[in-house]
Amino acid sequence: MALQSLKRVILKTRQDLITTKPNLLIVVVVSIFSLLSIAFTFFQYTDSAAEITHYRAEIREHWEDRPAKHPHRMAHYGYLVFRMAHPLSIFDNGLDDYLGNVIFLEAYKQNSANLSEAGSSGTLVRFGAFTSAFLLQYIVPLILIFLGFGLIAKEREDATLKILSIQGASNRAIIWGKILGFWQFSLLFLFPVFVLIALVMLWDRSVAFEEVAVRICVLLLSYMLYYFVICTMTVVVSAISKKASSSLVTLIGSWLFMVIFLPKGIQFAAQNLYPASSRIAFETELEKDILKAGNSHNPDDPHFKHIKDSLLAHYKVKTTQELPFNYSGFVMQEGEKISSAIYIKHHKQLETVYGRQQKISELSGFADPAMAIKNLSMTASGTDYFSYRQFQEQAEEYRYKMAQHLNRLQIEQISNIKTEKGGPPAIINSENWRKFPDFNYQYTSFGKSLAAQYLPAAALIFWFLLCIAMAELTSRKLKLI
Image: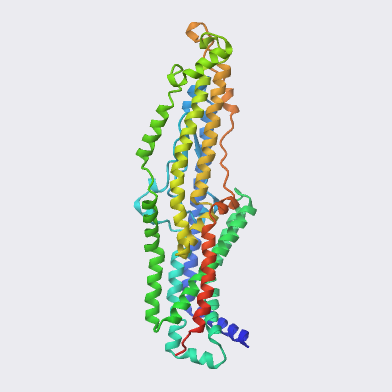
């Protein structure tokens, strides 16, 4: 009997919401905007991918067409590498607009990524991009609040709750029936979006569909949980409010707190608890440590004198010109090791600060479900900060290999005897540039991203369980009149 009553309340709540023409119109309009945003971002994604492919090929062509020259000149000629956006950025572009897409690689120096969308756009982009994720995270919950604030309070005012009770519906069946019926209606905002995303991903095969399918399923499940939380909170507030008007005010205030005030407060607190050095301060400290390590471009630098003395003693020669390899190249190879270690040390210190700031943002999901879904959505869409760090690490690994490869070419193929003293020309064949492979950016796997950023998922599950407890508690204290 109790189950039958629950089913009747669910069916009535769902039908009342769906059969109301304004409600259906809202669903249709929001779905159209969501689908249009996916189409728009998809065209942006394909245009960006085409540009990156074009410029990547151009950069590679210029690299391979360089004439025969000294390897050290090629080391400073440098190389450009590009970060390709994840296909699911068409749904949630996350931090992609704020992080650089291109890194200039050169020997003996690590450069940061440049050419972000926010850096080359107007101030409006800093308020967030108009994506389907933005609509589903912020706009749809606000719409649900306006549609559901009176589900209990209004019916109490109209005395229809008492009628449901007389017909055999328990307080528990009323609360859960309203929540589940309302939640089922809310899913109408989700399914069109994810169906289109799945179809687009079937067409775009830049990432293995199995990997993308897992991400889409996680996204869909996450937003279903998020909407369950929103629907439960709406019904609970409606149930404990004396009037529908007070329910609406409370819910709108909660939405403003979750979407605007708390995220800004968390960001401010994180930056003040773990302040990061400015770019000028960071580069100044880095340069100091580099200078302390010596100048590898000067073979007679006192910091590298011990290397010179040990080599002369080992090979039993008096001058570096008598060594069986190019001494300058050897010194620069050692210098690259030292400078890279210094760069990595400073970048790790900076990343530690950013990591602590990010941890506060992730922990805030336990206080704000909107923060939880935002962080989890970026992780599942491959547009989070962790994925960007993987690009930086891949680029640095490639840069180091490139620099040391050119240093080895100098060691092995450039004579110690200078040209003006009768030595051979200090150049090597251009075929050596073609042999070095191109940079191939690899997307971060979802499993690796989730393992590093599991707190948003845990926070969303926490809110799901909390809402179940809130619904049970509310059902025991529900007043019908």
